[in-house]
Image 1 (cartoon, one colour):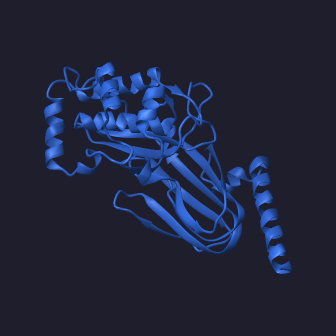
Image 2 (tube, one colour; image 1 turned 120 degrees about the horizontal axis):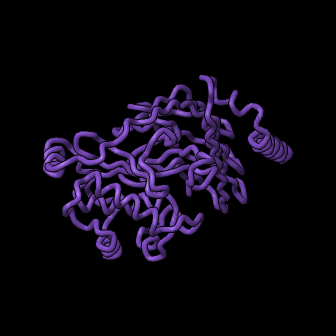
Image 3 (tube, one colour; image 1 turned 90 degrees about the vertical axis):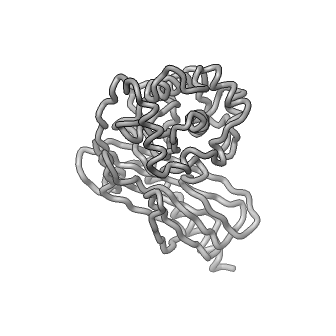
Length: 322
């Protein structure tokens, strides 16, 4: 399935700032069952954008806006083809734990096994794992254990928008039994790593299907996890929606946790309050067209862009008058 993706980000400042330096992780990955055909990045005020690929294969764009400005707008457009992965086996059978241990001993997975900033253990996490019956390897083979944990997080935690922040510790979500996709991913990562299963954080997008009971927020980015499974490799689990990751999930970046894959991270010079607006649109596409063609007739996006242009023109006129 082809998807046209538009990711709109706007920072508004209460007073002029200068020299905004930003890093972006918005370009969908091209690997396995996913292929990014086109990617376009627009920045206002205009800036020269550079890019590189990190050691995990994530594409990172970065730029510097040296002039004075009161808002910064970033629009990323992508066209991606995602194939539905092959179905998982019902069971891995006996010997799966030994196979997994042999994989870990043979290859380098230490960074996805060690605690990270948000994916770390705690007494609250260990108590929750015991409650779920996933605090030890026990009688369940790895795939069954991962599927069970994915399901239990979905049923025992409520999805509540704005109940946590990007830097909220997992203990807060565990105690309140609510959170957003980032919290569910971090909790699952920490539990899985405690079982000596390599597990990583995935940021990206989810195409919402009207026929599916998705809990994740429409118009936002999404997050899930991937765990290493013997004989199969990395398998995606979406505890927010109790899904095995399939053809509706679009991968942008992978890392140890959210701190590694934030869509935008940066700094600016100046003293001002910041208002952040983020909006995401994932649209099925019937043909390989540039993403801007998909959104050309979208009145909502056109209004956003017109407002940005008018604000920039007004700001430029004020500077000239001064």
